[in-house]
Image 1 (cartoon, helix red, strand yellow):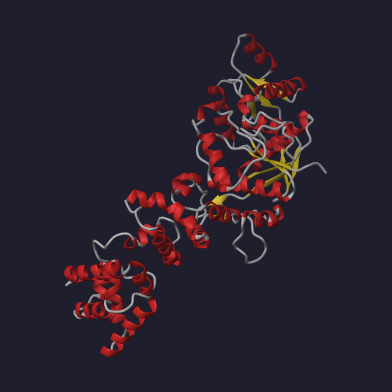
Image 2 (image 1 turned 90 degrees about the vertical axis):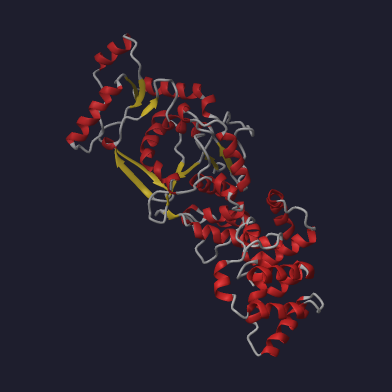
Length: 476
């Protein structure tokens, strides 16, 4: 059996979509699982839609995600170049072969003629293909006159085109329903269909793993493989990614760019783990997988046919899990630029590491350390209104003063602080919350947070007493 070779072949028309990341991941996993080669190919034949810098951005997004390709731009192998605009001679040669064999023809139809043919075809409500062919004599006259043309695939009549899909099983379509696809445009650039087949053959691709949207085009590709005498690869078409309302995932419904998720603080391993489950599962209840574990478990046999729902809340859950597993020094490295942006970069490292550990179970993103615990870095400028309404009672100032008097005299440790609060609660015959809630509000400005005694110990005596005094002055 020949070595497995797969490819991810994006067009440089913008960012790396999460759907593209899923396709790249499945190709990567299949290659690594089977000791194969993962190829990156840039399909830039649609020159008008190219976005400057898109190729570099896509490569960076793949590398950030941990998906290193074996061959591709900047990693040239024997099958390069890996950018389609640098392979035009190969497509022209293939198109010429198809013309010579009669499996393709030059089409001289004008855009206006094609539009009229489409209008009549739709009005006739026929299920057969749109017939754009013209008599040979008329085509010859237009050729002599120098009329612009495209090269189209000549789809045979009355044939059932079949292929096996590793996800969907046997797929078949009647050739009479397949249009004569444009293979080479009037500007000399090939369409996706011709370039794709020529490159997959030229690069030795054994398995074409791509999105479901290409299922309807595959019969045309099957014909091209046959007409060009190329061995046909295996096909596997992945399910669509859907919004919660089951509409197709698109930019109109929110973020779909990998770069955007990175900027928002999602971790690469969290995004990759989540995306792996958009159409695949290991067959049991496990949900957390490293990239190496995914390689060991992945199988196209466990890829689903039905669309996969993209659930942002589930992605957030993954991010929280992976962030909480991350060592504090690594979190601090990622936190430092954010702290510097706020002017909070002057704190001792030991203090920052302790703060990270204190908030570890209460964050889902690195920026949550700033958003959810600003009290780690500055005195509260205001107090949570809901908490003030609910917790700050008429006797709260007195309770807070009493708590201040007790803790100010005790050793500043968790155990001593806890003992002090229990003593004053018992002495007053009230619940300990009567003292804890006002203290938390005073020192953090918030109604919720980590354990109060741990919070007090970390902030230190001087800071806590200062904040209590300010709260008493402000809240009365």
